[in-house]
Amino acid sequence: MTKARIFGGWRGAAGRLQAALFLLLPFLEVNGESAFRLDVPAGRLHVFGASLAIEEAFPVLAAALCVTFAFLLGTLLVGRAWCGWSCPQTVLSDLTSWVGSPLAPRSSGQSGRAGRRRLKRPVGLAWAALVSALFAAAFLWYFVPPAEFAARLAAGRLGPVLSWSWAGLGTLLLLDLAFLRQLFCATVCPYARLQGVLLDRHSLVVAYDSGRAADCVDCGACVRVCPTGIDIRNGLQMQCIACAACIDACQPIMGRLGRAPDLVGYFLGEPGAGLRASRLGRLLRPGALALFAAVGLSAVLLGTVVARRSVLGVEVHGMPAFAPRRAEDGAAVNALALELENRSRAKVTVSLSLEAGEGDGTLQVRPDRIELAPGERRQLNLLVSARHRAPGRARARLVAEVRSASHLLGRELAEVPFVVPESR
Image (cartoon, rainbow, N blue to C red; front, side, top):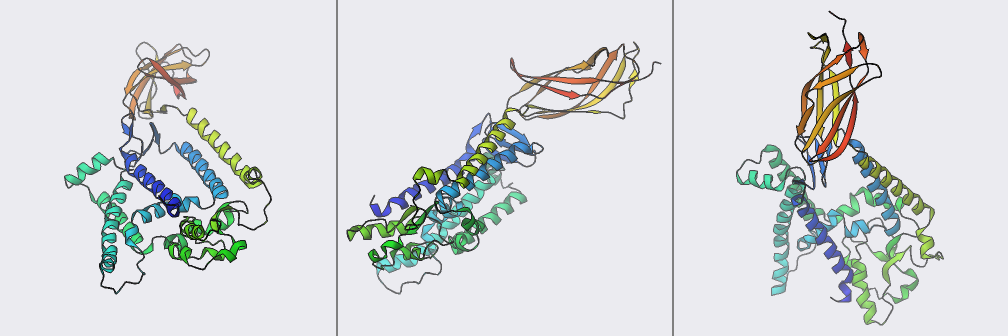
C-alpha cells in the first residue's frame, strides 16, 4: 500500500468492517434469541441476552444518556471522525463509489478508457441498487429475525408491512446513493450544523497549515478528491467530514518535492494558532472533564439499573367479580388477578407464598408453583385464604421466588389487597 492511500485504506477497512457487523449482528443469537432486536408485536427489546419490556424504559434511557455523552465527548476530542470514518452515510457512499457524482462531465473520447468511464455510472447504479436492497433488508432484520424474513420472502408471505417497508427504505437509500451521497453531509445533516458548537480550539481536525502556504504548488489535488467539494485551504468549514482524502492527495506531492508532508493533515486545533498547551493539558480541559464526568455518571447509572433489574415482573390486583367470602370451615377467601412476566432468557419456576402482617394469622395461596418459559407473560387467578383473622382489611404481601434449575435468581415482593368479610 502506498503512502498516498494510507488513510483511505484504513478508512475503507473500517467502513467494510462496520458494514459487515451491521449485516451479521441480526444472525448472532444469545440464549436462543437475537442478540439485538426490537420485537414490536411482543413489545420487547432483546439486547445481548436481556429482554426488556416496553414499560422498562429506564435501562434504555440510561443507555441513551451514556451513548449521547460519549458521542459529545468523542466529537470534542477527535472532531468529526464519526462523519468520515463511521457514519452510515459515509460507509455506504464508500461502498458504492462506482456511482460517482451525477454532475460529473462525461468524456467525449472514443478510447477504451473513455468507454469504461461511460459504463462506470450505470454499473455503479446497479451495484448501488443491490447494496440498497441488502441494507434495507438488514435494517428490517432488527425487527424480524433473518431466518423468518427469508422464509416468508421465499413463500411469498412477506406481508404488506414488511414489503412496503423494504421497498420504501430501499428506494430512499438508492436515491440517496445515486444523487446525494456526501452532499447530504454538507447540506442536510444536522450534525454538520452542530460541529461549530461542539468543537473547540484543541479538537482534532483535518486542516491546511496556512503558515506554510509558500509550499503549496496550487495543484488542486485536495479539491478534486474532496467528496463535499470544498477547498481545505480556506480554513475549517462546516462541510468538511474529516475523511482525510485531501491528506492522501497532498502528501505524495509534498513527498516528491522533498517538503514536509503535513501541509494538509490531522492537527489538534488549527495549525499556526499559537497553542502552547501540552497534549495532556488539551485532553484535561474543562469541557472534556465535564463530559468525562457525564459519561462516567451515566455509565454508573446504567450499571446500577441493569444490576437491580428484576428477572420477574409481578402485578397483583383484586377481582371485583369475586367478592371476599367465608369458606365452609370459616376461612376468609379472596380471589386475585396475578400477572407474571419472565424477563430472563431461561425457563424459570416461580414459587408463591404470602406473608401476613403481625398478628394477622396464616395465609395460603393456590396455585403456589408456576413454570414460565423464556420471555413468557402469563395471567392467572389466585385464591388466597386466611384463618383466625378479624374482619376488615388485612396486611399481606405476595412473595415470589424465582429459580432456574436449582439456582435462586431472585425474590420479589408485591402488596396484596386482602379483605376479611364478616362471619356468616
